[in-house]
Length: 137
Image 1: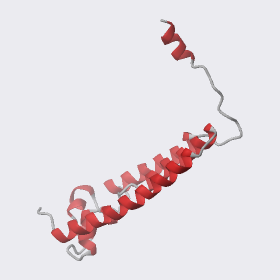
Image 2: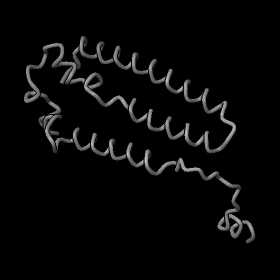
Image 3: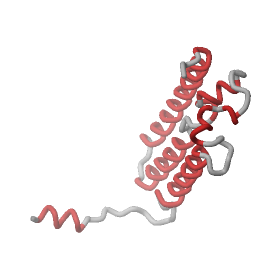
């Protein structure tokens, strides 16, 4: 299948917009992290940064060649989508896209829940016994 010039241009335009937004988001979090004076605050910011990066993953329809084709009326329905031929139509519950999105959501939830505990406890400087044993040999 030959690349359609108009679709490619729209895709590239969307990626350029995404790149600007992503860079703005990265700069925002890096500035916040630079000002962090406590490990707890820095880790909390890093967790928020990771979650933000997942939201910015360019996997939605404005970054899909075939969805752009459909939006430009070069493809009439998702049933005729070349991607759907091998991966099922994206909205279907068990399409490859739906599976990827479920796993992306799971990753988001795991990072949100497990990456950094936001309780009242502070991190202490802890000596790692495994590292000590390795260094002693």
